[in-house]
Amino acid sequence: MAEIRRPDDMARINTPELADAFIEEQVRLIKEQVGDKKVLLALSGGVDSSVVAALLIKAIGQQLVCVHVNHGLLRKGEPEQVIEVFKNQMKANLVYVDATDRFLDKLAGVSDPETKRKIIGGEFIEVFAEEARKLDGVEFLAQGTIWPDILESEQGIKAHHNAGGLPEDLSFELVEPVRILFKDEVRVIGTRLGLPDNMVYRQPFPGPGLGVRCPGAITRDRLEAVRESDAILREEFEKNGLAGKVWQYFTVVPDFKSTGIKDGKRAFEWPCIVRAINTVDVMQVTVENIPYELMCHITDRITHEVPGINRVLYDFTPKPTATVEYE
Ligand code: XMP
Image 1 (cartoon, rainbow, N blue to C red):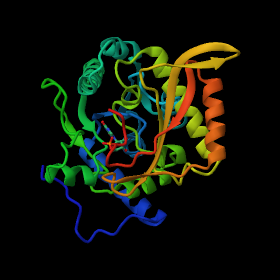
Image 2: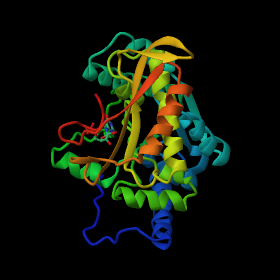
Image 3: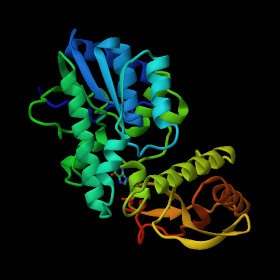
């Protein structure tokens, strides 16, 4: 099948009317392509896969099988939201796999960043392939490929991570209903399909998840400290009007301890680093000027509410010299 490309003169989808027209056309095309066959989708809960899921549910309902793999490195509340939105509200055919132990056992003692990424990526494909083999009659694989993915892989900037990766015995025809769209258009479509704002407008989140924010060898207790401190930071940014304004913000808990005092006793615990950045192209990044009082409040909450943390530090480093993530 010839690869579908974005027409040069295609109008930017930025109104509900344009979104509705796109949705209607895609529903027709998906039905035409798929017929009465089953379609499989790895649903991470990120913007692109969520919008693809919502589109396919509208087009083919129960013929779509969504697989949500929880690798144990997701943010607080994420797997629960995927289940709530897709299974409970949209009545999707959703397989939820809690593979936390599998991932964390494989990652135990591994401190090299690239090896960690490879383990997470490889294990993800393995878990997903195992689920795919359990299903009968699946002929299609849906993917949240978007237009910048195609352009960047053509220009050799980055390998288009959506394409392929599955073992050879699992060969599916691809269904890529948002492949000619830019990210902002995908969000407009998602909103029209009824997805919640915090799913459609969520900040970027790396595939290896909190794993890259728990530098060095991941331990369950330090990972939990990353997850809990991240949840507090997000809550405070939302409450204080920074959530829609700051491009990306998160916490990192490095693998060293320092002396502190808690409840009058010596507390030898980890620091928590807060990162909050703005960017247009992610090649260059500036650091957000967080109000001093808010930073003090966040520090107070994290040091008192998150077990194992006795200090909070703010990362003032732009990119370059630092990258956004720590690994
Ligand atoms: P860096 O650390 O390279 O991050 O300055 C730039 C942006 O990319 C995100 N990022 C990733 N996204 N898979 C992803 O989908 C990944 O492995 C990955 N690593 C980094 C990062 O969060 C930032 O927005």
